[in-house]
Amino acid sequence: MKRTKLLLAGVAVMALLAGCGSGTSQSVDLDALEKSLVNDISYEDTLSKLSDEDISNYITIPEGVTGVMYMGSGATAESVAVFTAPDEATADILEDNIELYLQDQESAFEDYKPEEAKRIDNAVLEQEGKYVVLCVSGESSKAESIIDKTFGK
Image (cartoon, rainbow, N blue to C red):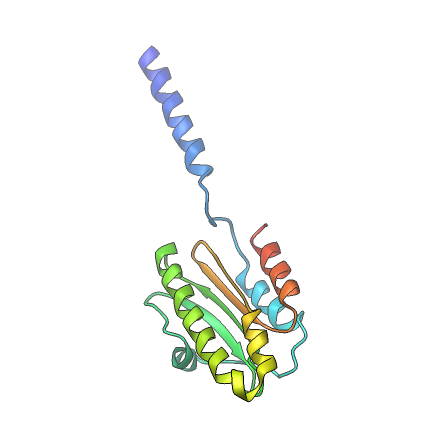
């Protein structure tokens, strides 16, 4: 009888610990995040949603990653991207690839439009578990707030 009670207690503790894992396993409304970053922030340019093929022209997307990206006409560096990776390790790789994209963009705009290079320098790039979010705008603090709210920070 003692063994059964100990076994049941052990199972209960394991179930509780499994439910208390850290990371971003909570339900995240990425559609709402995408819409909020696109619509609730002021942009100088009109952002257009890119096809998956167009996204891969700018950012190397690891296998299994899904998401959306919006960009302006090219007159500004403004952009929004929301991606989901299959796991955190893949999200790490994607974040590095986005950083390379931002470096390329900053170099391209430095001589052409220095104010855009500054905007890129202030870009919001956040990874939360398997999610990676980018916002290049003139309202970085507002973008950070929207992202933090989505991830319950």
